Length: 574
Image 1 (tube, helix red, strand yellow):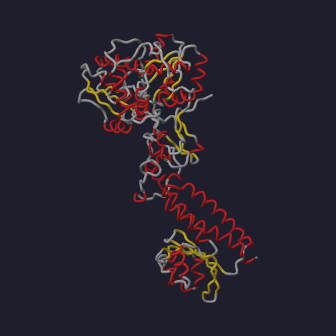
Image 2: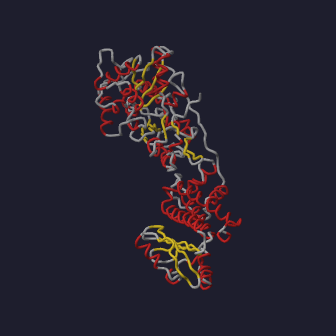
Image 3: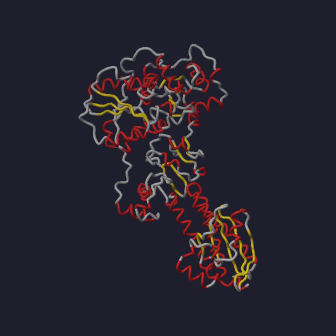
């Protein structure tokens, strides 16, 4: 059975807010049938969409069942514990965590920081022999994915070493046996992909949140956990590798010696992107080593954490690291070298003509019509057009387009409904009206309408004698239903209702001989459409999906009603 991507969408919970698209730094989300789903090939597993989704539709894959199965299959399974545990489990002694993990069934607990020390030791050797103008760390798998997929020209600059976690797995298998099971627990979602890609080294990766949930479901209170002299990290405690979770922590394990490199830490995907966008090529300024961390403030802010990136979490990691003494010499293991290749995901260049055509399809015919409001999540209308062309987006994601579409449908309805319709504002100025309205008022109004389409801007008090009905509705907020008034030789049944309280009122005017049932049906539906359209125009960014669907349903129903009248079932034939 194929596994889910480490980050996936629970489709039934998605609510068309597009916040995940706005926040995703690489736009690795596409919308299909109104549902936002993660595109695995584009995703760098930073976890930002999980953090910002307001309804919890973006999920981190739960691998706890697989861990339980692994514990049953293998007699010795070691828990590789990320060095940021000191910030996540503040106030808990390391030996209490070890003791609790043994209760869960683990053979022992080892610090992933030991793998970080392997990487640092190898880097100290490699940097002294390197002649590259720039070397990029590979400690953060999410940052590595960013480079390989979106900045492939810098892939050659990645240090040719496994991540600290995979280096730790190599070490443990060399020390304890290649048949042991290894489970990682930490703040990082991207580690799950490392487990998927390197199952011979790492069996499963879970988050700190998963581990805490497991402790809770097993009724284990870490603060009350009893320990003994055997509850220690294996094969030994870490030393300077415990600094890796914080910004500059990796560099601090390297910069004590002069390797001819200057060092720089970049944390946060947007920060890394800006830096790479500025570097068309590095050279002439001296050799540079870049420590990349996808999460702002380092690994203590990973998406698999429950704690915030507070000063307390950072200090806890620093205090734990500073409690260690000395610097490890040499390497425990060999075989942590690894080469990286680009993973191109770009669809290639998209011609300007195609972009223009896509823009026209959403009603953007001129540059002035390109609002660049970012409600769709793509920043600019042109970027949204590219997303449309690559199948990542749908036209309904454009709020201005949907508003225009809803307005056009409503306008079409107002123009074709077989009754007089007029909408006025608080100043009793006509906002819109249909031809039936002007025809009912006589030739003078019809002539005026030919000069001023829809009588837009005209004072309703100068057009109809019953203008006080509008004034009453605007002032009281109470609708007036079926008020019979005489205009010239005709008796009209007028219904006036609130569109926006105290601001806009609408009226439907009919011939008083219209059958009661048909009147109630059509007046009710028309009133709902007019109100719904106004709300759509005002709140399209929040409710466009819901209102568009409502309007579509009502419009279709009205079309059926009008079709029935044309077939001979209308009031005139009743």
